[in-house]
Length: 316
Image (spheres, rainbow, N blue to C red):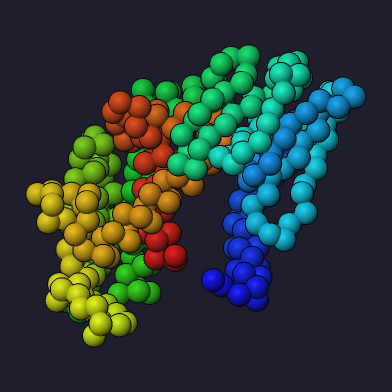
């Protein structure tokens, strides 16, 4: 059994980590007109979240995410401008009364509960829809207009390749495959500048070529392991291998190499984070601009992930 000192240190570590993510989640709100409500949603999480109507006001007690922690209490009066347009309950546990649902409907506030993966569990709003209709309209218009769709897609792929170049410069040792990856990356940027691809399919073919060269540059980098004298590992795990799985002829699902497992996990974390952000901002995660949506997949989230994936994972 762990000692009291170890338990206390563990609590402090949790508190420090939760505060770190809370600060990252806080965004500087954009300036708004004097009579405009804040566009940033109120996000609640943790254990013991409660929403109640007390004396005509909405009283919110945020949940506990770590120990030690003082419970946050928020109060909103009817008609005040500080009321957010939407309240997001991110996983956790707690209670909501029927009076709260009536209060929120009267004040035109959407209440959305999503799980830790970013999937919508339930929605309480007059429209019965979790997304902002104006932002969904923008998504549909961008996808319907081929010129706007190509322009949007090029900007995302350009950022992705630029971030790949930065990651290669800072994290990968220089050799022939590194030089080749850099050459292809810069050549792809030049092509995107010189002539616009005629379709998203053509654009993705260019990106796929640059991506293959990028991952080849990592191949062969040694991996430092500890305790392998007691728990030996396969020789193939002693260095970074190809970005594919032995269990799939193509693709990297069901990873057979630990580095690919780490990458898959990190991409899943990024996807969850961006999906939560997209829903909180009022976008429909299933309506992609560049990516196709199949069976309600998070196509728009994959759009947002394009420029961030490799750069974000390299920072982790």
